[in-house]
Length: 255
Image (cartoon, rainbow, N blue to C red; front, side):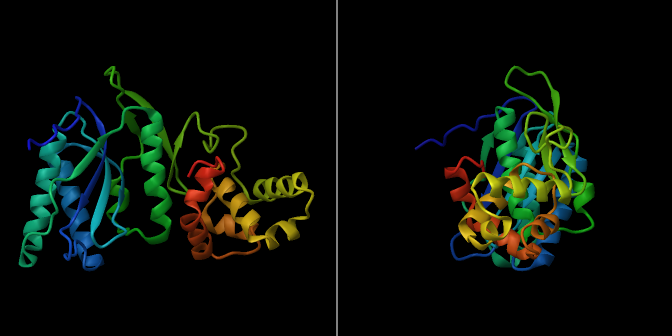
């Protein structure tokens, strides 16, 4: 059966996913992850693509958000994978099939891909001194019409993507960008439910719902959000976000 042709456009932006063969490990340690990022750094210089986000959280896969910047995404990914496979050649064949790629056709698609990666990053992703050099902070998105437009900036404190039309954009007046504003938002949420803040926080379901909402509609760090919600640690905030993403979607929060 013939392989389905990849969907590609000139100057396209893609969410790329690669998995390893069942029973194999793609990243045995953080040393492997650093090797992979070093290869990405080298290939950026060779192909001049832009890297908007990455997730190396698991042992058996990776995800990248790449703007090809006029290069061929297939050649980019082939070069990255061959170079990494060579560096860990003692393991034999490691990659399962071809990499998967999704052409991001709208700002909403791009937003979803970047948020998906940024939500995992605080919890378990790998960062090195290369991270800031690797990631491009001025993002150019090319819709199918072909006109490039700068749509996305990053909040320097939280390392999260910010689209102009999102409520979480730090350039909007309604963006919650301080702990004081976050506390006031939580007080309003409690009042709307006829509760005190203390009673709202005592109800874990309601607390988690409001925490997810604040994460979505603010530019606050995990530490700052934890401070607002009764002094939770960053790891606790991260676990709440990770465990309740699906519930957030059902409640219209948008994770």
